[in-house]
Length: 62
Image 1 (cartoon, helix red, strand yellow):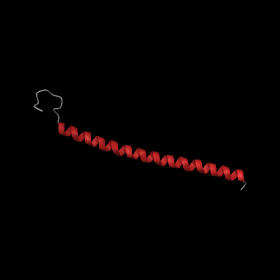
Image 2: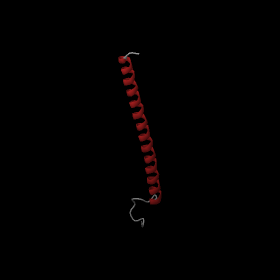
Image 3: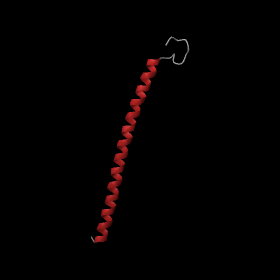
Image 4: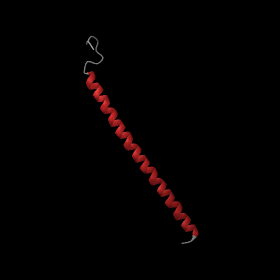
């Protein structure tokens, strides 16, 4: 293999590894966001359950 072919292969391998690393970071970020959103919705559901169906009605004594 001559020098220019080796350089091209190294450049393509570098681009491939960079794209793979970026993809893994993005996948980890999306997973983290999904887990945080699931936790947030669980907390909101719990808060609404504690508030009850009378939220916003005047004269309910709460």
